[in-house]
Amino acid sequence: MVIGNGWVWRLVLALMAAGLAFSHLLHHFHGHLTLLPSPHAKYDCSRQQPPCRSYPPSDFHCRQGRRALLRGSSFLFISCVESLSRAESKEEDDLYAVEEQRLIHLFEEATRSVVSIQDIEILNPKAEKGSAAYEDFKLEGTGSGFIWDQLGHIVTNYHVVAKLATDFSRHQRSNVSLLANDGTISVYEAELLGVDPSHDLAVLKIDAAKSCLQPLPIGTSLDLRVGQNCYAIGNPYGLEHTLTSGVISGLGREIPSPLGKPILGAIQTDASINAGNSGGPLLDSFGRVIGVSTATFTRQGTGVSSGVNFALPIDLVRGLIPYLIVYGTISSPRPQENPTFKGI
Ligand SMILES: *[C@@H]1O[C@H](CO)[C@@H](O)[C@H](O)[C@H]1NC(C)=O
Image (tube, rainbow, N blue to C red; front, top):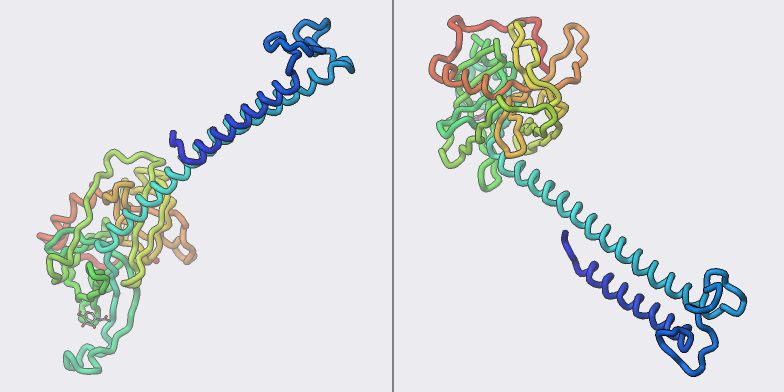
């Protein structure tokens, strides 16, 4: 228990009150108690029959004394209770502040590892590279991703880069925005290394200096428990990272993949995951990646979000990423996008 200054003060006050009450008592009983014999004794509370309990009119002084005693002791009691509850609520405040600080720290630690991915369509790809016309582009969408290692590998959802993955006309680009230590943002054109639409995963590579690449610590999804806290960090627009928090609401869920076949073992959470933080990491309380946030899917035809948030379990992801980096795919033919897939 924390004994703050308030506690000490209250104790001193209570002692003073007790002293006051006692002196009050002495004043009223002066000469009436056998304890303090006095030649002027008029009343003897302890001997009188019946004693103070019946309060005869002549017993005025006894009553006064009792009241004073009662007041003093109740003040003492209230002060003690109050100071104890104060100490307790201070303790609660401290815990709350510690929890808050921990979350702020978790967010700050992770932000530089969470990148923003912009889908860009070059409107005039035949123009000379570097010319004004070549710079004409349309921003088609944004998503998030996170730094996997210091070689510049970025993990994200397949649906975030699906346009680039299925682009044979070379009109599509994916740019990755990275927040540097000094708070500046650098933009890199990303190379698509590998895709796995059956698990909604993709790996990009950017050519950034090692000092700019801070990979996130990877956790495990094996020992996750329903009810434990989790945090989704996204970076939809390059500068503004977002943090959403919640708990793990379910494990072993099935979610549709861009190919239509379900992905098994997905994590369900109430931490909100939208198009902006899709592809970003889902973290545990220690800032370790436990999943890849994957945007909810619109119900086919309705265009309405299902409102339930999912993440790919990190153990699944960790098993697939090396294949995507080395072979570009986990299954041989380069995939075609499923037209019924509607990631938001
Ligand atoms: C994409 O990245 C490249 C390389 O950094 C840059 O030249 C280009 O302007 C970027 N495009 C957009 C739309 O940010």
